[in-house]
Length: 157
Image (cartoon, rainbow, N blue to C red):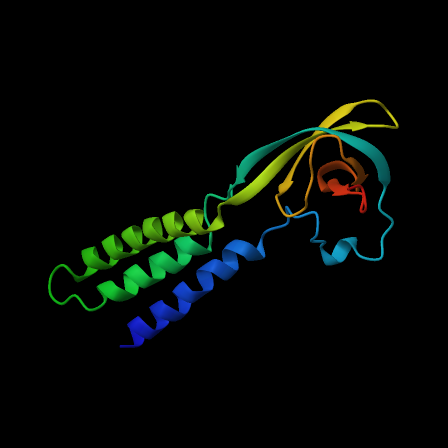
């Protein structure tokens, strides 16, 4: 019974761990970015393409939770095969947990091609699809390097 309660509690954490690591939104900032000056450049959107954002981590919370659940469930096996059942339960649970988390962590994103109006260079930025961005929009490119976001200028339409 304890194994079942623990399994359900850990499984309930899966969606939270999948979204907790999401830092691909132009609306979400880390605490290290607050109260710091962000570079902002004017740009024009040339093209927007839909993409799928998926966790690229090989080992994740789903693996650990699944392995623990599988190992715990195999504790109920009695007899000569108990050790083998624990190993098999842990492996199968880990694989299943990874598959579940990868499915949960997929979400819609966009690849935005923008002409930087200061330098004239065309850049591409991938971010979550949570802001209305279309070709022809004037936008701000905020941040620098791997933390650059495309933010539409309000009131264009």
